[in-house]
Structures are given as structure tokens and as C-alpha cells.
Amino acid sequence: MNKNIVAVCENEACAKVLQESGQALGFNVKFEIQAKSKIKNELSEKDIKESAIVLFVISYAVEDIENIERFIDREYYEVDPKFVINDAKAVLNEIVAELN
Image (cartoon, rainbow, N blue to C red; front, top):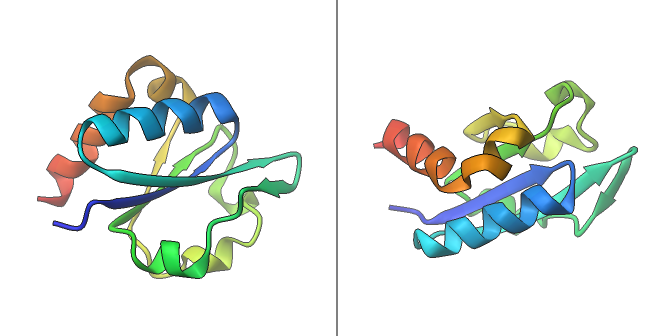
């Protein structure tokens, strides 16, 4: 199974806990932060194409993501940031179970 996950997070707290939890479960998690119409640590096209899934860890509409066209034709999941902060491992396990 492809163990690469990319995430668009609205803040660094979500990104950090997601990355740490992903590593603990054996996943390679790469992320970018999108807040106030700015992108920090922008994901590369290569990272996006090599990912098994894309996570949008945001509390706003997916349509409002900057440069959303990069994610066309990718399997994606929307997750409210509070669920990632509370239990990122459970979120990742649930998504992986759906993929299998």
C-alpha cells in the first residue's frame, strides 16, 4: 500500500499532530498550511501525484483552497481540524480502513 499522504491544513498545530501521528502509524505525511489566502510550505506536484490520499484539514469550504486545481483527480478527504487535534491517529486509521 502507498504510505504517502499529503495534507492541506489551516494551521501548524493540525499539521504537526497529523505528521507525528502519521509517522507513528508508518505513513509519510507532507503538508502545507493555508491561511488568510496564503500558502506556507507549498506541496510540490510530485508530492501530490505520489500520494495515496489528500487530506483537507480545514474548517472552510474546499472550493476556497488556493490553487485547488493541483488536487484534481486525487482521492481526498475533508476533516475538521478539531478531529485531527483530538485524535489524528483515529482519523488516519478510519481513512486507511476505507481505502482497503
